[in-house]
Image (cartoon, rainbow, N blue to C red; front, side, top):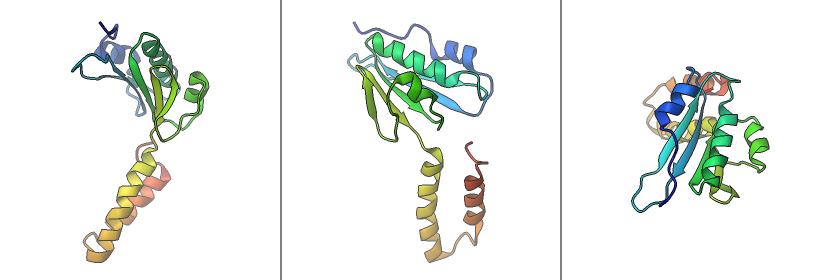
Amino acid sequence: MAPSLLVSASQILAVAGRGGRRRRLVIANSGGAGAPPKLVTFLGKGGSGKTTAAAIAAQYYASEGLKTCLVIQSQDPTAEQLMGCKIGNSLTECAANLSTIKLETSKMLLEPLDRLKKVDAQSNLTQGVLEGLERIVHRGNLMS
């Protein structure tokens, strides 16, 4: 029988959740036949230890035999230092049962926006609304 998570996601959120905007995700899959993946999130204010807690939890779950993927949104190097491997925007295997990936949310938002702007340039439906949205994204006011 594959190991399972020791605490539920709601218990972890009660400890780590402090109303911050940034998130760290740890996804652990028990690997059993038909067993759904388990998602663990770390929420809180900047500097509250979300990245550290997520990296330590990911290493623990992987050491217990759970196939684990650490998904990081932050651009700071803390996770790379804790994991001992380079975390890029594609899936990277750091250790047995442990992979990492870094989400570039600004890029993820801007690529579809650029495609939409190309379509809009042909039909002129928005009359400049997208330009304002793009300035907000570039200033870091959206998803920061």
